[in-house]
Length: 144
Image (cartoon, rainbow, N blue to C red; front, side, top):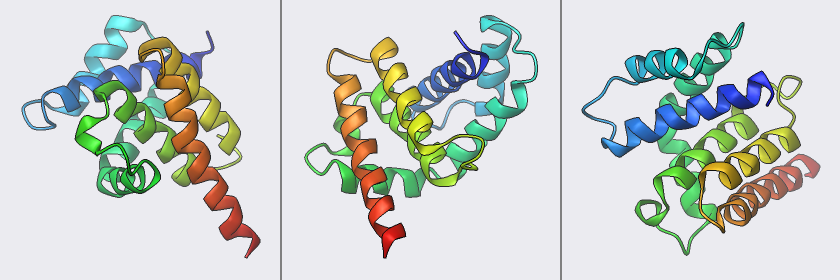
């Protein structure tokens, strides 16, 4: 497993715990520190983890709006905590990350892999569908 993939796994586990407690009763920074310690030192990836966590948290309202538009048949609160946070990570990387660091197809593929590993049997297809929809819309906007 690549160090970036492991880093994204730690981000997902941290966001899951934070979201499980309704983003209120826990400090995301403490959760991240605990998970980095528990799941192993990631030489050089702590900055990546912290940037990804802070980016998702800072943009969560916008990310959630995009999820709601891209998956209208699934109200946000009905999407599993795992899938919801995988989508947040994937959308953040797709929309806000530097393309030279995380190309769009890498962001989508990494999210699908997280969904297959941590989600349910249909999570990979669901995540692929939502992120694919957003990516196609981005491509259409870039053409115009």
